[in-house]
Length: 179
Image (cartoon, rainbow, N blue to C red; front, side, top):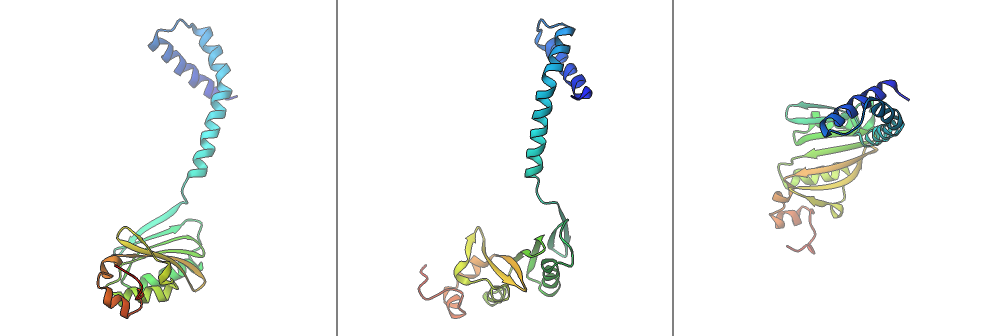
């Protein structure tokens, strides 16, 4: 049982008793604080354990030339996902964000300038076109590149796909796809 917690509870109970004008004297407050300290300590430990479980993965977030870079603090910068993220950021101007949450998982956000660029990203990241989903103003899909699972997000791609004829010609949508 924590003495410091007992004193804190005693002070809080004393203030509450005075504020509410309760008929409790110092002896009552002392006994009450001693009696409820274990229950309060258990409650605080439970809350602390729950908060620890819900804490997000600690990240280092930086912004480099308009590209947001998120890297888990426990991820080695020489891991396959971190190396792939660096390679893509350095070579491709379409990359707007990379998120390396694990050594073999990369979240990659791109803003392709054309349908051909988007097709290149899908091919390069191994994302099948039939597994894409629209999320807001982006298309998302998951593929594999160099042994890394890549969660690809193409910002602005639905706008590019408004030219359905061009999209069909380069194989991004099938003839069976309807408006």
